[in-house]
Structure formats: C-alpha cells, structure tokens
Image (cartoon, rainbow, N blue to C red; front, side):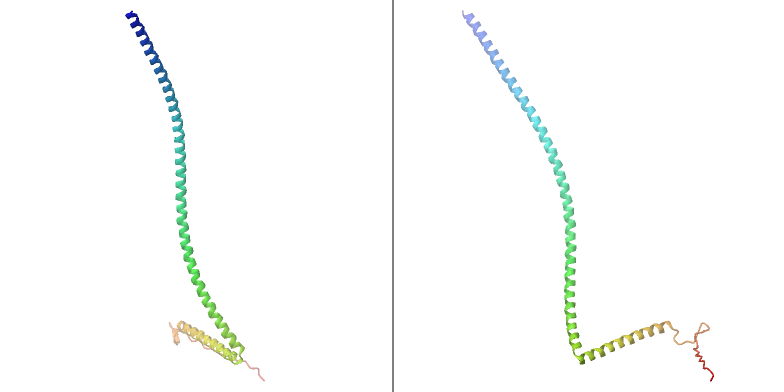
Length: 177
C-alpha cells in the first residue's frame, strides 16, 4: 500500500506540479499579454509624444524665428526712436528760436507802431529809411565800380599795340534858319 500511496502521492504531486505549472503558465501568458499590450500602448504613447515633440520643436523654431524678427524690428524701432528724439530736440530748439524771433518782432512791431502814430517819429522814420536806401545805393555803386575797375585796363590807352580809347563824338544837327 505504501507503494500505492506513494504512487498516488506522486501522481497528485505531479498533477499538482502540472497544475501549478499550468497556472503559472497561464499567469505568465496573461502577464505577457498584458506586458505586450502595455508595450503596444507605450509605443502608441511614445509615437504620440514624438509627434508632440516634433510639433513642439517646429513651434519652437517658428517662435525662435519670430523672436529674431521681433528683435530686428526692435533694433530698427530703437534707431527710429533715437532719430525721432534727435529730430524732436532739434525741432524744440528751432521752436525756441522762433519764439524768440517772434518776441523780437513783436517788440519791433510795437516800436514801429509807436513811431508811426506820432508824426514827428514818422518823419524821423522816413528820414532814416531814405538814409538807409541811399547807403545801400552807394554801397552797390562802389561794388559795381570795384568790379569794373577790376575788369578795366587801369588807364592804359594802348594794349597789345591796339588803341583802347574809343572817342565819344557828339554830333549835333541844327536846322539852318
């Protein structure tokens, strides 16, 4: 009997071992299937992540290019602002100068109006204006004379063997009475 029990125990042990191996095999197959599904899922996720990474890189490159363009525009705008500030300063200076001229002209206008409202002052202003006009004429004539003297021959009557003197002859015709 001992051998029968041993045999039965052996068969039960073998059966139990096969059962355990079969169960382990089923669990291993199930785990393998789950692992393969998980790997497939991970591959899908990895592909999606690679696509997202590619899209992100493309966006990054576009953004980087836009940033470079914006920086170039910023440099140009800063230059324009610098020129505009310089022009603005020049215009302000010109404005101040014009305001000063306006003040001087207003004062001159007031003094001229005061002179014109008084007959004595008006006569005095007319004399001054005539004297100023006369001085301008004299100055212009002196300049004209100086130019003609520079162009002339300094009083020589002959130059290169030719006479430079052109006599002026005035012929008067009188009717016989």
